[in-house]
Image (cartoon, rainbow over all chains, first blue to last red; front, side):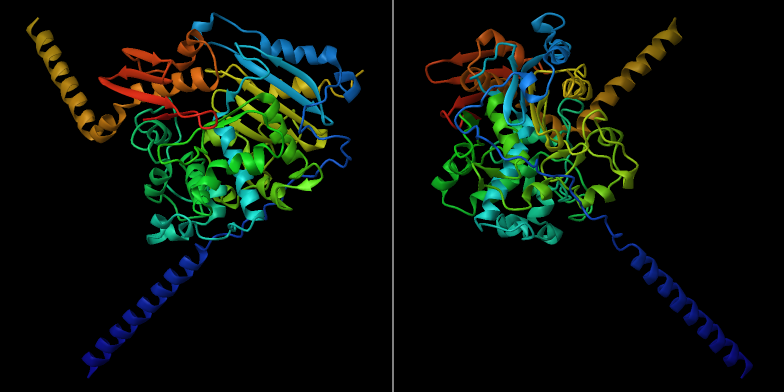
Length: 408
Length: 104
């Protein structure tokens, strides 16, 4: 009898233990649910001015003085950006190819070097990603697709495992979780950028992007990944006829805002290389920045959907959840295919360029290609270059420009 | 003297084995990497010449990357550039005013 009592009490104790343990396990799982992410509030505020003209034809030129800038002080920027050090073949130091400054809607500064002239196109590298952003804005406005739709709807091979949870929004905000190793020179043989552009992936870059395994659940990790915009450009193709797609960037964007000369290279599958291969002139890059400065409105007509620029300039929710590398902490924050020069107090991160306003947003490309949009100063600054080392400092460049404002 | 030789021999064997193991581990990456040299250079050169319209001299400076190439050839009539590196050649072709160059 006693034996049975002892036996059953041991059993009961064991059962209690199991129940407690499983309860603890379940509640710990509950804690793992994604923390509430800060709302992605944008700092974008459209300059409150009535435009007296639109640069669809040509940019109108003003002396810096007539746009509230001091040309003597602006010369400091010119000296900083346009002094080449060392022979051409060594490719050392600051190697600026072009600078264009638009203030209050007028072209106040323009200079070219390195064999480039006003009418030549320059590779923009990853500035291309921001062009992809604009095309998606236009496509959303046309009702071709929606941001919260699953990506597999437009790229069927993504309809597998957890890949099917990837949305268009995740891709726009570099939060798909698809594996990526974003280095050009540091680890050339392991780089997914190199593989995509030049080796195993170059024929069909979107297929290469989609073939990657997930390294995180979709929407939980922010990681800058060049294959992503190429996947987006292939998805866009699925929403229209092939010959419409071929002309789409020109018909709906470039020609509309008067971009005179744009080349957009494609891969062998005919997909526009959204990660890297838009070529255009600094004046045309300025037109593109000006479209975003004006909240997606051109010639008083809406080109991008209402709220699109705010969406593009709010921090990607996954950015808050991600443990950033040292380099990523120094880089600007990230929105949707645009970089953001803003403080991120939630992560204890100061803005990347302390001397530029916090509402500055940036298209940023390899070897120094930039479109800086600064709504609070009603300004667009374009920079092209061939900076192979780290000599050129964005903050110094912007500081020297901004210091020339409102100084007589 | 003999000990030095012995140590030297061991170091050499370890080095060779190390390189061998590294190569084995990274074999797929290395194999996939081989077309890189020719493809990068031909693509850079093609876009620099036919898209940006710069001079061949400027483009040679711009197109040079870490991996060396053993030679290149520009076909100005067909607007094609072929470059050779790491024993493989890569070709890029200009496909038109809007669409620039694509690796073949």
